[in-house]
Amino acid sequence: MGQEKVVILGTGGTIAGRADSQSQGVGYRAGQITVQSLLSAVPDLEQHARCPLQALQIAQVDSKDMDWPIWRALLAACLQALASPDTRAVVITHGTDTLEETAWLLHRLLPATKPVVLTCAMRPATALLADGPQNLRDAVTVAARGGRAGVWVVAGGEVHAAQHVQKVQPYRLNALSSPEGGPLALVEEGVVRWLVPAGAAAPSHEGLQQLDALLALPCLPWVEVVFSGALARADAVDALVAAGVRGIVVAGTGNATVHAAMESALLRARALGVRVWLGTRCAQGLPVGPAPLENEVAQPSDLARLPIAKARIALMLELAVQSLS
Ligand code: SIN
Image 1: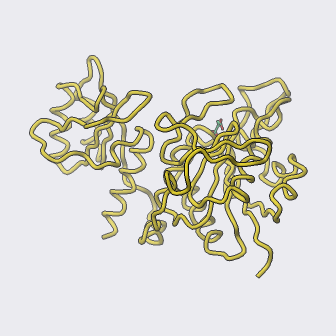
Image 2: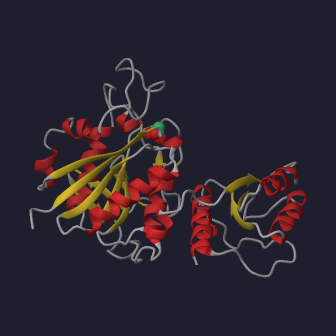
Image 3: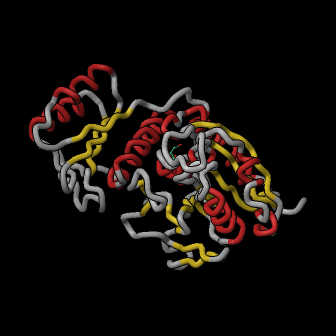
């Protein structure tokens, strides 16, 4: 067995973005610079990790375009790395826009045996004061020396749990936040300071048994989000059902309540076998007790209490897993 290494998987994003000038912070192209070049921009990274680093380019995309083939390749690379006794941890460079969805996917599917740390940047790699190199250094710190298995997100000196992190701001450097519970650790001068005891928030699940079968699927079931609020209508729900949607996540009001006009369409959808989950459009917090739809007895599963973007992925996975059994 060789010396344990940290595997760094590149997927693109602003952290790998290129602009025409150093002062340009928007209007750049995400996913242009190789993950190997990102490592080279932090010259002491390997010394800092105190172990070898191995870079692998999985994709090179703006994460708004994240798709199932890339997720499949990423999952396969993570599984291979986690299974290897030569790998201590995995770091993933990713765009901020769908980072919370990828983090949730990995948290839900991978066995929590080693650290898997996602990181990102809000300024392109070509910016005069790019934030990517520091975030990458911090992510390697958490991966190589943080000492905790599970999926984490590192940005702006903070460590977030995959299940809570959300992008809450489109421009500022501290664009990521965990409205439920806050960051779980801070990275300060190359040292991880955990704010919660080990196990308090760390995932301990075994991963998904049918992962190989899931990875063989050509796509995940179609799930859409509909928004309920003033003047909400039934039409969008009816149109989605007519087009063959398999699941609907409602970004509902307050404690996951729904406009009466839309509720009747959701009941029709349920009667036709479409899964309907109720969540809240509130930016902070999760529904305390999602109100059932009219005549409904069962409460939606706990997964529906995720932030809307993650609930959508969770429902896709739930429907996909059901289709395998
Ligand atoms: C992306 O998500 O790939 C672009 C935006 C970003 O990384 O901040």
